[in-house]
Length: 101
Image (cartoon, rainbow, N blue to C red; front, top):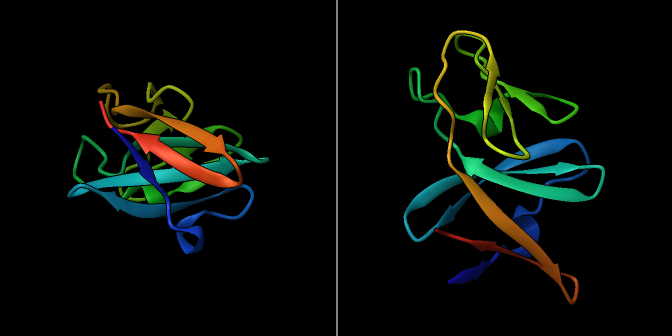
């Protein structure tokens, strides 16, 4: 099922924001107008990825430096080797929708 992202929750370019979808905490990222969504919780120690440092398509967890590619959820370096769940994001008629798997 697709869930509409409230307009005030859409991140500005090259940033991320926490959104909640059916009790799931999701980090939504805007990379130059392209949107990506992953679980907000770092698998190492539970820190919020939405508060992490975004460089290109990689978000770095501020707690211990784990790095994740927000386009696919893969761990690409740092303290952990576990990936995070990635969610489909669709832009339609000026609105964003996230689909939970």
